[in-house]
Length: 228
Image 1 (cartoon, rainbow, N blue to C red):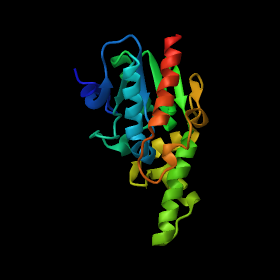
Image 2: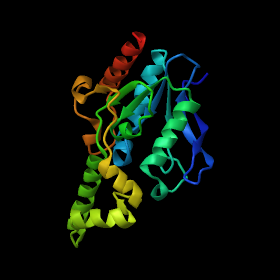
Image 3: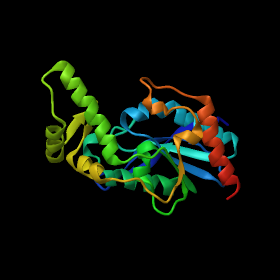
């Protein structure tokens, strides 16, 4: 049996129907099953390999895990601009139910999609406003270099009305407005970067991995699951 595989899972769509999305799973039918809700946008690119390395280590600790694609993300064919924060939350709830998740691990902005009633951990959580601030900063820096410069206030006003493209990501108006108010779920156990060691990989210029950080993060989760 391979240690992991890519499978289809039935994900809710904004049309009210269901369509297949991909999920990376380490699934040996074990009792402890962790739904992983990853970082978003550019941080997702920087943390993708590290996220999978944490899942590998959980597998070695007899913990199943699943990393589902959400609509408009990764390999999804669904248009990102049509997604809302609530549509992503519904997809996260559906993934938790479909894969029979007993726990959840959220990474960075993934915490904003935490399904109700599932215990787990939030690693370096961030708010929706901070997600947007980072993306808006990247756009204003790029506009200053290319000219003419854009003002953050003008970009925000337009985004609330008609959506906006930020760092190559097309965010709809409803999603933008929702993110401005979105705060991290509080029922999860905090895992701060200081307890993992080193600096956050999302701060690096290019995608990277850190085996020691992956070891530490997976070990904290496995130890707490062992005492559950």
